Length: 91
Image (tube, rainbow, N blue to C red; front, side, top):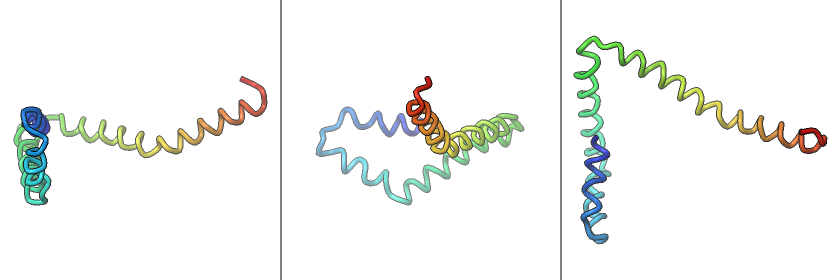
């Protein structure tokens, strides 16, 4: 939602106004404040309501993270297999 609000402010602007719009939003104070607000909203929505959603978030987040970490090795492995298959004449 915050990203949508951030983006929706840009299309109506003139190009020369965009840097002055972006600069305050890229400061450490603004980023810290936005992060704190997002964490507070998450706690209110999921933690304080005793929802099971945080468990799902951890599980799926862990699966996605492990996939992304192993992706470069898998790509190298696949490329090696393809090179080996092309070199031996077998498809």
